[in-house]
Amino acid sequence: MFDHDGYRGHEGVTWISDAATGLKAVIAVHSSALGPAMGGCRLWHYPSSSAALTDALRLSHGMSLKNAMAGLPLGGGKAVILGPVAPEARTALFEAFGVAVDGLGGRYVTAEDVGVSVADMAAAARRTRHVSGVTAAGGVGGDPSPYTARGVLRGIEAAAARVLGRGDLDGVRVAVQGVGHVGGALCRLLAGQGAQLVVADTDRARLDRICDETGAVPVALDEVLEADVDVVAPCALGGAITAEVAAGIRARVVAGAANNQLAEPAAGTVLRKRGIAYVPDYVINAGGIIAVGAEYLGGGNEASVMADVDAIGPRISDLLARADAEDTAPEILADRRAEEIIVAARAA
Ligand code: NAD
Image (tube, rainbow, N blue to C red; front, side, top):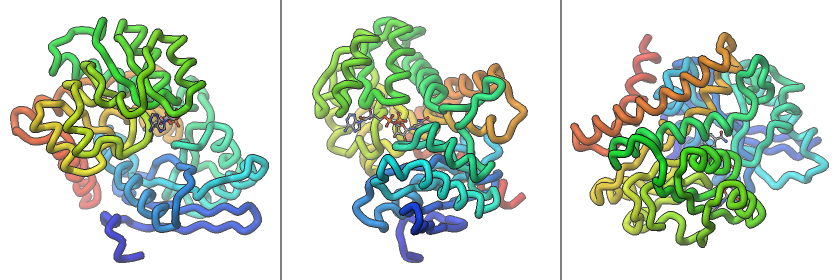
């Protein structure tokens, strides 16, 4: 375990096993230098417990970077639950997960991620207060997806302005890979601004629904990233952009919600060499954590949360401008800045 190459100075990893409910989970706290380590809980069918650890380490490190770049007083953590979970066992299992989170005494704060619903988090919340994304009390928090989608929209607008010289998205062609909670909401926002959409999803019913609602045109799963469009928005799972895929992308901007979009650093290099602007995933998809962070920490209101989400736009403009000025990939600049913020907080 200690030789695992996913470790990035993680503060701790907790393995949870609850015989009564069948819960098996890994909670990774990467950093609590800036505040409680916050990050969602993912439910996934991992091929091995080692693969689950790899995911938890990678995602929790990413949350540290995301929260630091978003200017939040939150560290980075993540939980993964090893699926599958029988539907009838689900409520009890998430309550057991809540007990496990509570055992960490607030060092880790959980919320929704892929495979986990608001109802699941509501079950966890019966056993711990260190959970967010459950209520929208006073208009703040609840399901993070709409906030994530809004932040991605702001990021696409910023990138379109800088790279395409566009003042609005009317007629801008966008390919969205994955039209789930975030991708679907993003499609609605983009369509509302007059963007022309092409979309793909493994879930046919979901795809049809979004096409009906937004006028999007469906394309094959293996064509969406290489579609003839202005912007590609990966909003499915991570690792979609390999160096090979990057070599085939025709858009001038890659800006989407999925975490860990670049399967390998070489993919970012290929994009940069080809003059394609990559908007770092954890900078553009921070809207959800901004909202659930405000819900957990308290003190915010709908207007202040929206303003914080909208600030993703100017942050991305700055990042893309600096990337050009310093001739360095935006994802490398973002990592450097986030690490600086964390190191300074740790020293303080
Ligand atoms: P989701 O499960 O609701 O949606 C994902 C969609 O992608 C589903 O409709 C699924 O059928 C589809 N999909 C899966 N594999 C695909 C493939 N190969 N090609 C096309 N479609 C495929 O998840 P979500 O909450 O919308 O999150 C999407 C991404 O955004 C994830 O990577 C997640 O980590 C990231 N993210 C989500 C949030 C949030 O607020 N939900 C915040 C930050 C980042």
